[in-house]
Amino acid sequence: MEIILSYFSDFTPRQIEQFKMLGPLYNEWNSKINVISRKDIDSLYEKHVLHSLSIAAVFDFKPGSTVIDIGTGGGFPGIPLAIYFPEVQFHLVDSISKKLKIVNAVADASGISNITTQHIRAEEIKNRHFDYAVSRAVAPLKDLWHWSKPLLKKKKKVIEEDELLPGLICLKGGDLALEIQESGTRPRIMPISDIYKEDSFYEKHVLYVTR
Image (cartoon, rainbow, N blue to C red):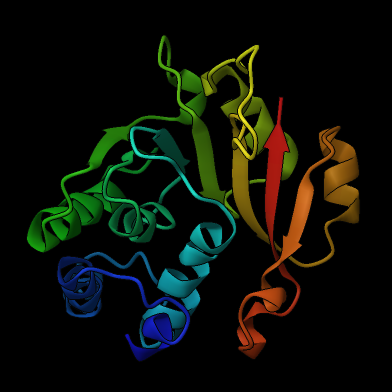
């Protein structure tokens, strides 16, 4: 938990309590349903929570925004972002129902009320649109963009200064040159090592793709 507070300080007491609860809750649930590797569960706050919050370090979702987390797994990046942005609505989807069981249990126990979940593949979602899609290394960028593009709201004709356009924001690692080329997109790329000093974030990036 201390590693979170070393980078983010403007939290309410409720947010701090919610972040503190994540450690015990994930330890308890991961012993029943293994969604986080054994070696990573001890580094939950660095490798999962802080990693997820790199999106919040770069982007500011305005109150009332809607965000879909594609392939959320055990709830990353959706759960940490939902705590960080309590006035933003997050919809966490995954094709494996047991993972969403953990997401729902963690959200309920920690009082995160701005999360909904759905057991579905992103490409099967119809007639719903969101301001942003987020995802953490669940598929190649080409697939993530193919799935998320139909779910994103259309860009408004009049854009305010510094307004964050509807788009896909994903967490990726390694050499991304070929993956980006194959995706046919031109993402904005932000190295997470510019945000955090820990070695685990070397060659990890936040990517942002708009229509």
